[in-house]
Length: 504
Image (cartoon, rainbow, N blue to C red; front, side):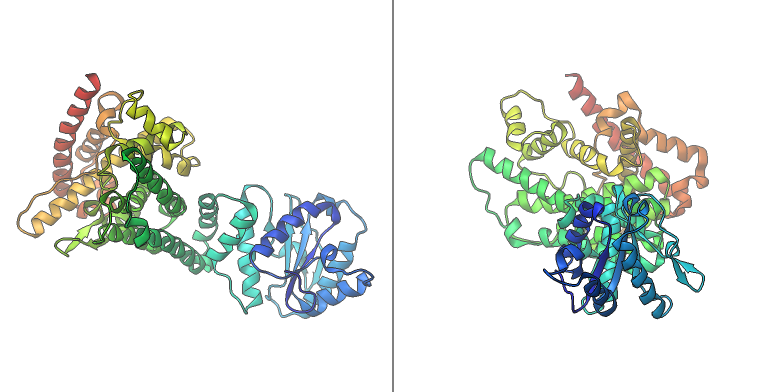
């Protein structure tokens, strides 16, 4: 992708940084950005000074000056000559025009080159291409460059694809870093919204793909179980980057800024209940993105006490029910049991393979040969394992993460019961109960009952209880108590069964 005549990026560096520049140029290549680099762009016999001068002055739309300890310790270098020419060109350009971009390969200072009018090179916004922030900074850089080039604007999602391709970085980790960088910068909110929306579309494409859900499931029973578990694992792989971004947005974003993630949650759940032909086991898996995303949003909001954000993301959005075609709360339309109604061993296999980091077929064999017992709550066990990496920066301690997982299960369960109560009251009758039960049902008798904790908090704090002040339960104490009491009653019955099963 080298263009010495037309539009291009000029890369200036010292040769000791060749490896770092190779990586930078790989990113530019993946993003389809033409660049000029002396080692690759000078032909045999070229008068290098004249060629470099021409490349900088005539065709360079962006000049990248790459700095490191290698460049700082040199008193004389070809890079210094290139920077002198670049500064001359920069002074000719209108104020505020992006053209000269410093790049750091380490944490050292950008040199104090005089740019005129009281400005120095260190005053310009620079890009850090080192450490854990490399992928996000690289994605921001290629997005900026395409904006300057103008004729082929690169979307943030395409920038993410390019950096992922060039650096072999984990997509979920990269999306998380980009969300952290862009969420609180109003100038980049449109880019972030587009990035999240395109990530949602990747998941929806899989959920709605007829070839993915139409089957048929082939092979014997064991092969079909492994096929379903494989499909679930692949679908989670597509959903994880969205959840990684959602975890950041739910913790740090204000409710009015959460529309891209709210729309994603609503779309996931709506697609999961859409009428479609195919094997039931594959159709049920469509619930997985919604369930995982709701649990992610719940954990991020509950742990940070962002009750208004929880209301915006989880409680307020509605979908159209598949039977009555009436508005239905997300927590009623899906639940942790919805993705895996059959075959039973598929979710146990998925959970064990994830928890013990082993192949799906090997995990299944342990169940079929009775070397392992089934889980009491396999979906919750799987979620607990898979969501852990997303919250490592929030809860480094495993016990704290687990305690918050328990509390989140209880909060979502009570909110689901409240949605049921509201529906029944609005229609003058009916039936229903929350189905958001998980690990807490077997952990409560030994590790603490988060449902009882919520009841105690409401009794003590009344109208000042955080969830009520955040607008949950309509801000109504009696409504919250009704939902808590009803959920606690059903929870107690299930927990009792789980304890009896555990003891026997």
